[in-house]
Length: 626
Image (tube, rainbow, N blue to C red; front, side, top):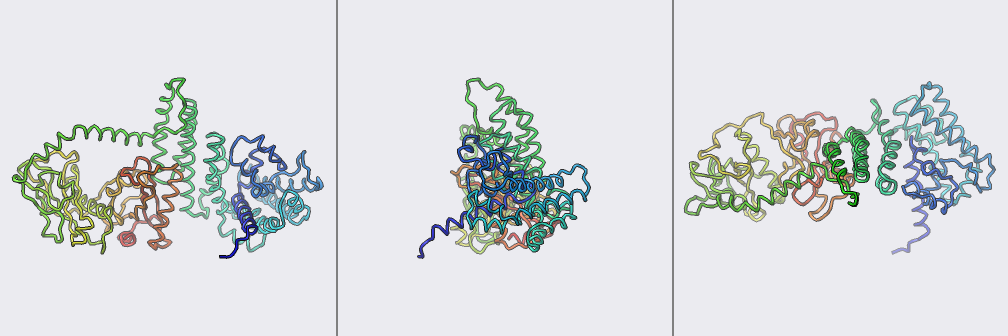
């Protein structure tokens, strides 16, 4: 193995940091996000002064990092009363004039005060002239050297700085195409500018992403008000620029940024409520209302809406907190999560009294019943539709045979039919098989018109599968497992309806309770409105999307991190799955991320594929997803 050159590795690391910092800053927020503007420290402040004035926040961390600091110094004022640079004062003043001219051009374009296009173009022309003079002035680079840059750093800045300077005007061509001429006048290689003009929104994307990455640190160091102020100045403003009709943007990327922004605002509001109690009610509700407008993911919208609805209740609880009670910095559980806790308590209570119910159901003996087959290798071996099942115990134990009785007797359930498992050549795992069986059982229930009942199926495990079992039975029963009427409910000869749809929850239950991969979602609006009632249709009918998969993100014992982290993990997992399926550019995907309310131990994402133009299809997703 060759020796590693530590100096070369260090130089490469510095170069990477410099390049990343330039790209993060480049864009309409070039000066707005400058660390020296934010901290109000002069560009020649030494480390002792920085530490003395430090009150937290990522901007101070930038100034204490020499590789990032030098980039921020370039884009702020040099002519300070304490400057110890041997450069002539006029050099500092010319540099500061270039900074101000550029800043004013960006500000005038983004927040114009009634200036004409000619007046705005004159601002850009002056800024380009001033910065060209700086880049051509050897004294400018000598100042950079005096501030600690070595030859390699100066060479990199010479190469990268022109592109960073032109990117604000490039981004603003999204809304005023006439600025393309102003962009071409900037001191950067013409081909570089032309390449940037092909993707004018890229600086905005990068700046927003950088701001969102800074939010957790700002929340911890400076508090929710400061973090929200940063979001308003450095993210909300830029997202609004991406939303202008006619702007050439990547719709999928903009949607993701809007959703991440909603999650960040949600975090700020919850932190504010946790820290300030009653005083936080009005601002927190305003912030959450803003988050609702930007949420593009249905689960994010549901989460933010629950927190908005709960804001006054949370505050009320804090108003009556004893004065000596320590403050809890953790955000309170939204109502949707508290419901899960309430249901869990009810389940525990049911367990305490459930033996009475189970004893009642299991009073049959073997002599009272006839065993029938519900898992087999052939359709004619499965008990026919309309067969009445005595009790639910064997069914819930997933046995291949269950006890049957005459339908005039008390009975727990009835056979709806059987599912032929033909999708896989080898066993795909219990989750996939259970999803397929349960989904088909629900279709049988809907075809019978018995939607006020419940249906689920048994399934062959891997051993039975390997022995040839490909047929699994479906049973109708009541939600509370109480006795059915003493007559047959299922009509074996009933013809299936052609316009049936299923309304099912998605991503809320244990993984096997979800629709299978390939299941087709009929209605985009309903999907984004309420994940507890997503409408599914047969894929032979017109539909909007289909289930792409359910990647596992966290194990049963793992704690969920912050929503923004979970959302990012879900998008990444769904993106990988999307690429693995080999779907073309005419398709896109949506990721639903898990929340603490998701049941079943393992925390999974729901990945949904649809056409990028949101047009409906017939059959296509079924084939693509499968």
